[in-house]
Length: 297
Image (tube, rainbow, N blue to C red; front, side):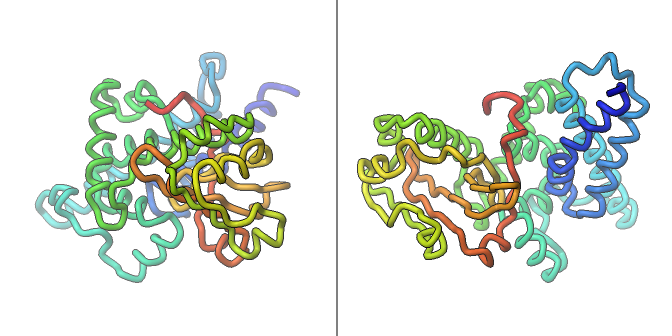
């Protein structure tokens, strides 16, 4: 395989992830595809010998392309109005109700808020870090600021998202950390580790379709749920479901069931398993297994 074929293969392996990332930043599938295509053109012009981590490089370039598009979009609104756009904290969440409903169904309420209420730099920093676990050193390169400034941008975005009724007080990073810890403990059969992660009154609730596929029955209580799930989840992958970390069973790449988590404080308070195909079709599911840059900061 020559170099150009290898690069093309690497790009295709990352393309779905890049389009999902761009979609969450831009809110338009057409724009997301255009942004990723622009990234491909940059790959073809780049000094390939200087690229040590192709996946990380593609993430950085796509982030910059999306940021440029967001800034351009904001600038056009300012020029059209003749005045500065109000601060994102004071702006409305979506101007077209029908479009907002469609977007909410496709990217989740939390990310709808991100796409419509955050300034471009905050939006990019928040999505890259809180959703995709990209480290702040890389985010700083994307937004042209120091890692510390990138951290502050993500933090501001997080505070605004968490302050909205649509998202409540969910901390995306904390939620993902607990789900990842749950997945490790379940796969390793770490009963005590699972008990520590679970709320004493945790509820495990599969739907009827999941039960028909062989899921464990409904169970309540930390020790009972830990006993039922310890040693399981071996075929599960780490995903996003409507913007929150979740697990999915997807043989052959086709999602057959999704495991969602409700977090209260530092414990998992509820675990639901959905295998109903109609319900799964309503979820915005995207794998995170290939997006591990570093542990969440």
